[in-house]
Image (cartoon, rainbow, N blue to C red; front, side, top):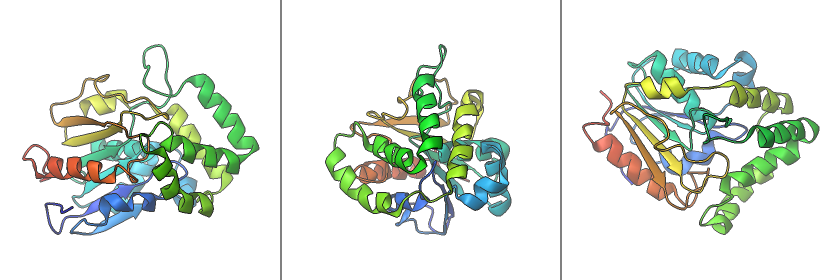
Length: 249
């Protein structure tokens, strides 16, 4: 898979409790510089919210770049795009969500009950519930067996951040509501969701966005875009970046 815009920079932001390198299939062919950012202990320790992480990364990468974020990383990317459009002239979200927790007016998130049970379990048995989350990422996938094989190496490495920081950053998921931000951000944005996502339901079509935002739901894909469905995601990303509507200036 080839990408347009040779020489441009790509900033890749990982999700909750996972290494951003899990997305390597989506950025290894990028022709320019790639900055891979995991939400690691150092970053979580110095930040108290998604917005703080966005500000920290904007200070590190102030020049124009395409930003791509997975899951919680998608919220970081969208916060950065809303703060500094010159630094983030184009954005890509993977299995992202404007709001993680469902309520009576937002049905496309995880239920409060399920999140509460997971949050309590994480405090009691952090490693077990971290592993449960990784398996939940591929639950419902049309290729779950192959996905699980690909996940083995990451499961074997254990959680990449301290248990206290897993708990701290989980609270960001609970508190963050970016619906207004996602509906107003006016840089070109590609939102890729999985039609079979069991972590959060696909929200495609549930939120009114700007004409510069494109929402694509991948059939058969769950919450992890970097495994079996990487090639499909790459094709969509390439098309987005090649289009005059999606090119970063």
